[in-house]
Length: 68
Image (cartoon, rainbow, N blue to C red; front, side, top):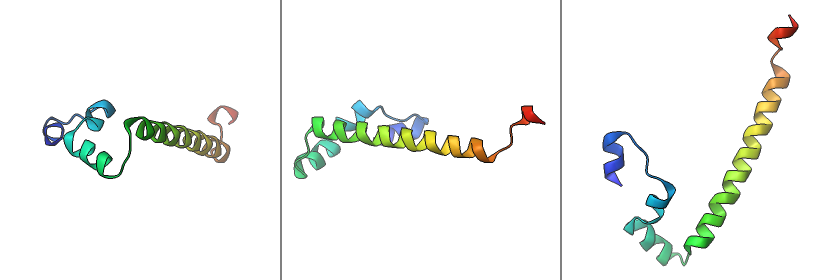
């Protein structure tokens, strides 16, 4: 994965999951690719929900410039 840091790009999730060191850790921890992807999707949903809630709270706190 060192090659990604050198040119400023990030690897895709698919590339990360298929890195040999990641596969070794998954094997050691008895984690399947399917289970890992399921957990990632749940985290994305929760983070997205939290982001939307924060945006709504911020909108409530900040005055609407069109009302002034």
